[in-house]
Image 1: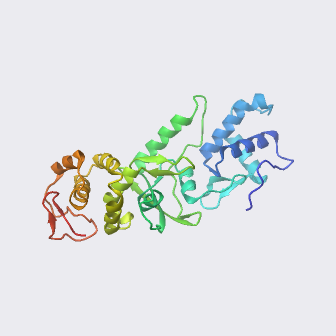
Image 2: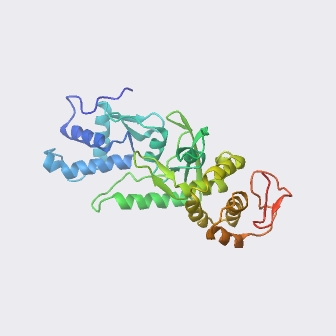
Image 3: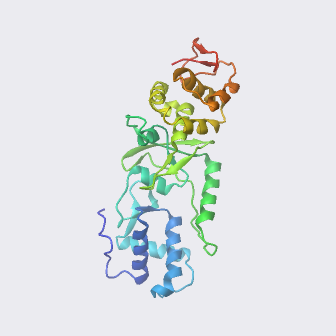
Length: 302
């Protein structure tokens, strides 16, 4: 469906519908969850006296939501999203965005990570086959959504359309999507120029050691560390310190210390976490090798 020109609406649209349309455009967002759409309806009801909208009630109901959504759909202002279907409202008067933006708009719990984040940070020249996202496991994600809703809702708002964990389709805006759920989802930042959330530079380096298979493989990870780790050393130290895995600290220590010859008090602290064991490998995807780092107590199987 072709987008309409912003600010032009059918003559038969009600005054309330036209005003709601202006609110939709003002968000600058091409997609909205039902939760967000109902919040805009709430805002319209709060503005109704000043805007002379002459609404029937003081607060909106689910019936008002259904009526307004249906009216704007028939007016060609909104529709179902082409990838998420009726679960997500597509604002046809706002230009569409990239897959990275869309997934972050419809899912407040996710962020761009691993090889996709490496590409955005300029750490790799590889183009990932799929857009890789990280979000918390189901229990933690539900808690994140509750916290988010409590933060944005006004005391007087009663929203009957709570945010729920969304299942991302296999493709969004023609991009494959891979969702990695973790009990230890990491730190991220929001890009200033758009809606994209991305793992911090330190977290991105940490992810390379935790899930090298999602970062181009350990050989590629080593190449990236050799080229960029010295520049981002402080961020790497801070991120690795948050890791719950002692093995990850040993991997980071080996790369920074023995391969790159870098010195830092944080690296020295990690030496205390070394211990022998057949599962302690530099590359978790490959077999144990006899070549071994005595300092970091890991098999150098790359």
